[in-house]
Length: 148
Image 1: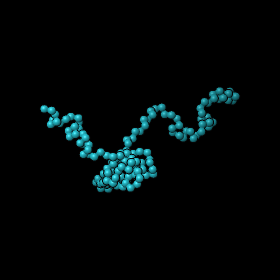
Image 2: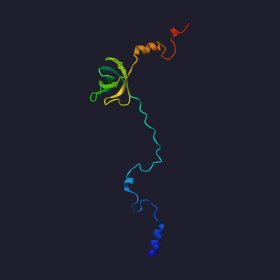
Image 3: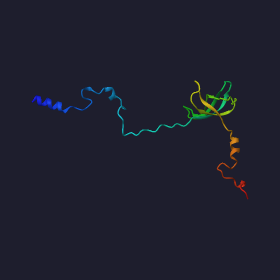
């Protein structure tokens, strides 16, 4: 009887990889070791390009300007909106900006240890209005501008 029992056990031949410790436990502890077919692949995260506007406060360095950006943020305790200022170093390849100029900072690859923005000129509001015309914002002329 024992010989028939052992022969039937040998004939069973367990096909599990876990039999006799053939699978290392390190692969079992990883949650992502087996592909999950229920979860679809997520699309890559698209982040908006970071741009800020500020005033040049220092332009003495070559190809670098210090720009002070002012933003309104709530006070941590009193919740009143207060002006918060921060200075950024920005790349100015042509040394075109002087102290007091309003510039737009655009995020770029790190240029140096402290510079990761590029300074770009900002079109003044008066020039934008003159460029667009008085009533030509929507592309429709004013009644006074229409021919009679």
